Image 1: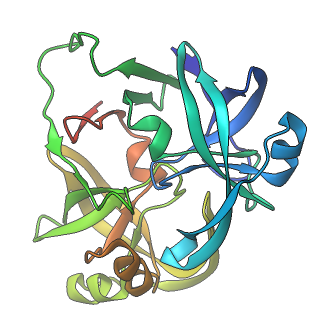
Image 2: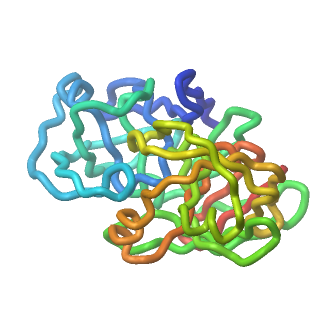
Length: 267
């Protein structure tokens, strides 16, 4: 088990990570990030140099240029991976972390986040798992694409039609599109900038009567309504109407199995 910290500025999960046998460094656990990212300051500290520049997806799906290097080894608790590509960015927006652990590290493991217990477990996909308290409901996930490997999940709002969201542990709040807000009749008030691990987006605030993923349910959930989904859907190559963030996920113990492409929620 790995004890996690939560940023005081934003409810983001900070993991103690060792990079090239140095650390620990505080990196945000971010299922919305395709690639593990560190700051320029951290890359200089550990002597990790950029070898190329590529286009990446930033906040709200906008394209940004990112320098890339390779970490010889990244370790979190007893779990480690060698030759991990990392993005190098000038700053990490408004967050206590020095970067983010993304899909290219997490995909090798079964990820269990116990929000209330403040622990994370990374288990090898070949290890035998014993379900605690009986068989859990496993909800299908979909990886958007190899180039944009975010986790897509079907969400039921107000006990009505299902909508495609992406599950993002780097998002402090659940976000929905203006089109979805109009369809389900949400009244909103202006809120200004909303910050997550990927940066700031503008939005207004409303509330849904209920939000469910499989049998996992949260009633009277505040949501941010933001016009980021046209850029995001275009970048992902699939229509997305929302982001499932910390304010929903933190009510559960969440297990993400990247190989089986499933997620489970336990109270």
